[in-house]
View 1 (spheres, helix red, strand yellow):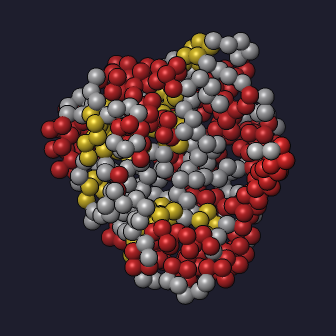
View 2 (cartoon, rainbow, N blue to C red; view 1 turned 30 degrees about the horizontal axis):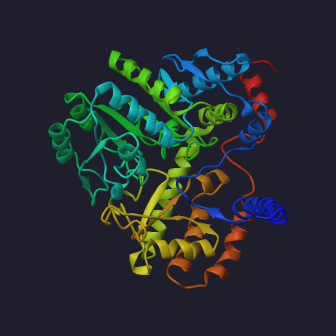
View 3 (cartoon, rainbow, N blue to C red; view 1 turned 120 degrees about the vertical axis):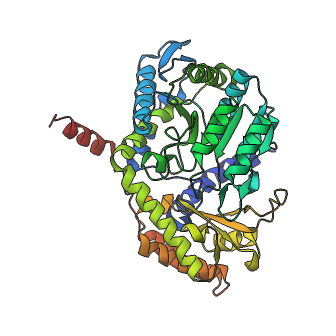
Length: 451
């Protein structure tokens, strides 16, 4: 390209960035289940850490998740920051070890799968089928198969119950003898039957991994299930979905057995030096702020998030949409799944809702063909962001009426968009969190009796 074209594109990039912030932040209602919303205090902490964002902190950690050795100089405050963040995260999940260095939930899965398969010398992993809610990182077409090199064995999924079929899956685990059994996933409405599957895994020497990326904040708030207590060896997750922090990943465990400690060392080795050099420490302080907010407000946030999701499921169902999970109250998490095949399928409905500034995603449903990802029957709606903006049940019902207008073709999406933008403008603040770092510091001083 010419110099003029280069400069024109640079200017357009700045303009597009500004336009995006206005569009998604001010004009849209975001119902993507895999996205989250940071508080103003967490955002202020990110902005504060401008120098930290530029630094490296290569090295090894110990089995408390603390810094053990660093290979660069200038690390004394970075070490404090990482150690303190790890301690706060361990506290809210009541565990003894955490790895906060993964850059995403997918990388958290990668290092965990790699570390456990290396320790067990077993390349087989049992997981839920992709169409039944597993994340792509669990699949033979994703990093588990294509990067880590695992053979994926699908457990049986009950389409009616929207959960793992226990008896059949226990038989599969015992027959296949995998090194890893992975639970959790991406389309994730109901807690899996942990104890029965964990018992079968222990019988064949497998580690149980619980991918809590979507429900991590609900777990912290005590509103989903407690995987470590119910038999999981390791929990992986994202720090930016129901956990309202900066984008990143983590792994945690309660290291009660020697083999768990050996596995944690293998996972740490998979983080550094095998897959990460710069662990982006500039996000750690904001992660700590999010952990503090969950400590103080996590139960309220989780309860309201689940109530909002259940309200949406009930409202859409009562108005004629096929919402999955009706017999179990539609969901116990932040998300619902809706079959919109009779309205043109998930891709078409998602595009029409986008025209109305309601942002959702198309999604495979458990009975869809796993190979037909471009034309799924369903859509997935997540309520963690609108809950943090202050939506309650009545507001969710109003939103559902707008969704129904678009899905059923009662109104042109472009006409609905005006009402969507007005509804969005009614919710300007952030609930269940702090408005500034000054507020955080004042609250902490008061808790400590320093004022």
